[in-house]
Amino acid sequence: MSEETKSETSAAAVASSKLTNAQRARIERNQAKAQKLREAKLVAHPYKNIANATASEERPVGQGNAVIKVQGTKYIDSGGGFLLEQPVLPAGDNNKVATMEPATAIIEDAIAIPVVYEECLECGDQYADSYLFTNFGYSVCDKCRDNEERHSLITRTEAKAEYLLKDCDFDKREPILRYISRKNPHNVRWGEMKLYLHRQVLQRAMEVWGSEEELTRQHELREDKREVGKARKYNKQMKQLRMEVRSSLFTKKTHAVHEHQFGPDTYNEDDDNYTHSCTTCPYTETYEKM
Image (cartoon, rainbow, N blue to C red):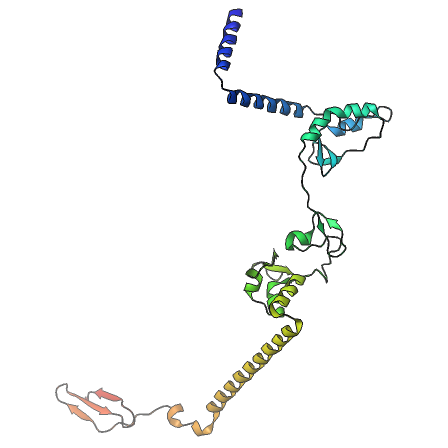
């Protein structure tokens, strides 16, 4: 048995001597990664430590737990998919400081997650995310959101009718207006509605027409054209009605049933039949006499 062990050791030594420096480095990295994964599986759950701790014997938070650093704040990985904020330790507690030393390497290796904060146009506070900013790119926090008046939504059809906008003003003109799609409440089988932020649509209308006075003038011009078109259509229908009921244009030839008035008969010897023609129309009738 000892001879087999010696042979295996010698074979491993010969094989390792044949490895290049790059292969040895890769093997060392894989071993280090496997060691870290093995240690991560052995980390105790923080809730278990907190539940078992008593007032007289309190286990320091962070001992045996994964600690990460986000924007300068230290958090403890609970192992359940969320983070717990690490409590601040009081100064002069040497025992707790000593217990935090093993987690120092983990904190230094932690990746800081960048968080971009936006400033609300209504209250001026900073926020990380909001409904209006996510869907429409409008920088207003959820606390200042007003769905009824200031931040109400409008459909694409209503916006085109109210502000006289075209499809290119929504889809081509920069910046392109963002929208959300919703099912049509009148009929679910119809196409989905495109809802835009009313304030952004109003701003786009001002970019197209320049001012509210110009928009009002365009509404009046289109209303006048609509009235002229209605009047022209009405006059055309009345003229056609007069043409149909005027007695001077009514004749029996155009409205009564036509009765043929045949002339004298003509005998065809080749076919042995007779032919006569109407004197008031080009109709010709051929017949045989018994």
